[in-house]
Amino acid sequence: MKKLNTKSLILCSLFSALIAAGAFIKIPIPFVPFTMQFMFTNLAGLLLGKRLGIISVLVYIFIGLMGMPVFTMGGGLGYLLQPTFGYIIGMAIGTWITGRLTEGKDSMKTLVAAGFLNIIIVYSVGMLYFYIIRKVYMQNPISLANLLIYCGLVFITGDSLSAVLGAYITRRLRPYLYMQTGLQQ
Image (tube, rainbow, N blue to C red; front, top):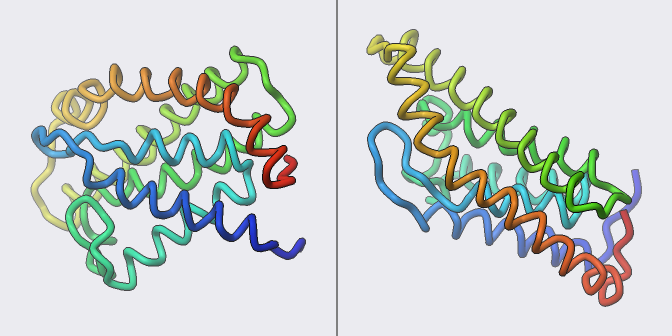
């Protein structure tokens, strides 16, 4: 495995911090709050690629599971049993796939499509985990209709805008990022 240089470590740290900050930029709604985490995890995949993007998200997850209150509702190993932890898992998977699909590609169409695929991945993993934890662990099942509405549909507009905005930001920042850091995907 290729070693990380100082610039790569700084970028990973920056995106881990942005993801953590994004957890606290939120709009409270029932069941799952809307946060800016998707925007920052999507950008990590788009700008940093699969390797550095996933490292950024995994560092964020590790810090949170070790007890730092960087998740939307705190931190610690107990967070694994929070119904919303599935969205964090989905963000890690989605970041890697987004990075994989867009490495070396710069068309707006590809970047937006990868962002929308990322949404599908995050929602699928997040809702499945939410449903299982609520039903099995909490023994307080949620109806499929409420699951779809409160854990998916209410976020579609904001996350869709985040996907398009992320593609636009990527198109604008990638050349500068590569020129300044020497980072290549």
